Length: 330
Image (tube, rainbow, N blue to C red; front, side):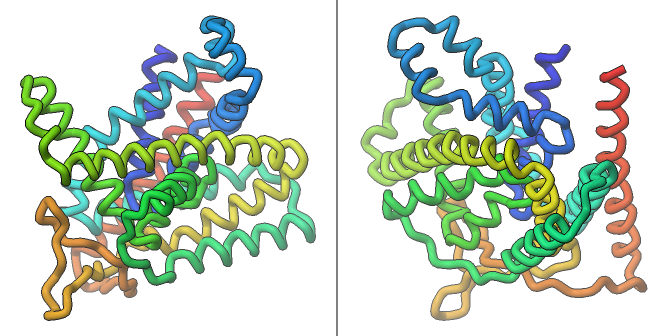
């Protein structure tokens, strides 16, 4: 049963990372496995590589907490081809309610993280305010243009994976700001999905499709950058959590609170347009999102009250997960 729950946690992390404004790190933090996740990644070091290259696979697997990482990452990968597609479907049709649910879940996560934090002082308050300012500032940055330079793609991989390791920092939203969200999390993933589907049918025609091969190359570089970022950031975070745990927690609380600006439900989507003013489409015919324009809700609109209901539902989902976690500990 524990193995199944680990896969489900991976599914939740993968889905959260796919949605702009939501952080997979929050799922790990609230799910109670954030520190184990970071410390397990930190075990991927020179000692682990020596064990691997010397053929001591069983010792390597135990050393890096292999079962935990394997099941969690498996859940994330499955999520990119299943749960995340379901989220895409609802974001297209019921966008307001999806954002409202996530807004409520983040509200709940702020309560969850801060309720037992009893170490507020001048240093932690300053750290919390700094995290809040950085978090809310990110939500109002203007995005760059798409760039498929492989070195830049590699850097995108390193930066985007921060959403898994830093609660409150959305890797997907960072990719929007860098201009490569559609290229790396839509076009590339769809290209890989189509390639697998063709391979299962015995169709090898994609090897003559230069555009497909180039997209797969971009995805491979992005994946390598993400893996590099995961391992590198985990080592940094392990040190920070060990030596500055209270300040780090305060920054995370502030950052997550600031990130509410990113997932504010009441916003209009700003689409990319060409020189003639027409909305630009990606290779799959979907409009390319640039950013969002936020506004205050109209309380005379029944849809607003439904959105508020989903905010409350999101809070209760989070609190329900907390209750379940406490129940399993008993």
